[in-house]
Length: 119
Image (cartoon, rainbow, N blue to C red):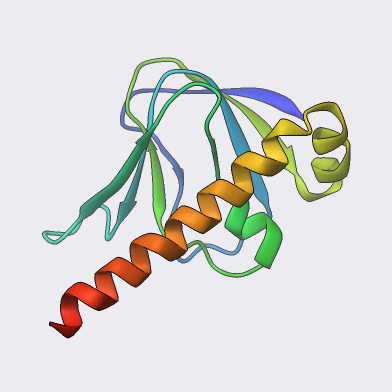
């Protein structure tokens, strides 16, 4: 695990990339976007200190579903590679619950969206 710093508006990872790591925000803000840089880009969520992101790419080993962008100057995030995953959760067990809550919220959001579109 290592601390990485990002400039304002710096892309941290891109939608569609195959990468197996995640981040834990220490300072700053990160925006999670679909279709970033395109006319139909959409901000899905804004994250701040103690939030994590990129966990889906780490857990699933599938392409990124969104683009992560630093929203503040000198945003600082802990980089957690696949090989660091077990040790990270051993040191920070509360983050396991956070990931479960994030995934549950995403499923709930998708269910709500499907219900809305079905009307």
